[in-house]
Amino acid sequence: MTTQQKIKVLPVAGRIGAEIQGVLLGKDLAPEVFNEIKQALLKYKVVFFKGQNHLNDAEQEAFAKLLGEPYAHPTVPVKDKTNYIFELDSQHGAKANHWHTDVTFVTEVPKYSILRGVTIPSVGGDTVWANTNAAYEDLPQELKELADGLWAIHTNEYDYASLSKEGEAALQKAKAVFSSTVFKTKHPVVHIHAETGKKHLLLGGFVRKIAGFNSSESQNLLNIFNSYVERLENTVRWQWTEGDVVIWDNLATQHYAIADYDEHRVVRRVTVGKNVPVNEKNEASTSI
Image 1 (cartoon, rainbow, N blue to C red):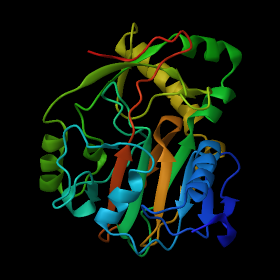
Image 2: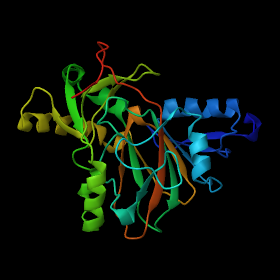
Image 3: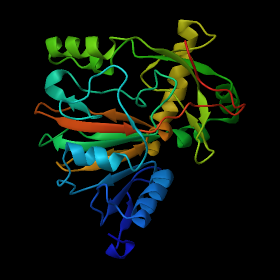
């Protein structure tokens, strides 16, 4: 495969997201093609590929290795007969309907997530991503200065799926697995992206509080910062079809899987790479 296959990178929204056309993903992707994908990923934060139905679990894992060392979920067992795949099955309580960055409850946060649509409802089940650099840049200068010096406590003590009200038995089972080992980590509220050098808000649904503030003060601050992340101007929404693959820069985004569907939904994710966030003073995240 070469770049002569007329790869197209088409922005999907104004501040985040692009669809890449003319590529069949796989482990044998030509270096120049992979480089185009990587540059688009750095620029647009999340990239979408349609028509990747040729990928099975093993091929998804093999392709993901091009982006970095696969990162198994710290608590949830991988899908049967796979090495790294984290399956989100709506019949087993897996509806991640809250804003989050993947696996921020540990110090080494995954760099990239590769998500494949396997079983998609006929309507509903879209996913939304937010640009956390744009959110930071939108802050008034005084709030930027405040955020730059803050730290947040992240934990997996409550599973994101607990926000779903469907399938209570399956939900409780999923929650028990997810929090079988409790992690707590202190991350900077603003981290410096390792590849771009840009500042990003590092928050989301695994945050329990802002260090140094009481619960009420912490929640008020989180509400302010989260309101900038969740602004529609900073987001892109993707309507899934089976065979779609989405890759996102985990440390440059948050995402939200919309739980507005009744039909079965299955998506499978591989996360790769590890990065310990640091703030502008080069102070790194620590485990609690």
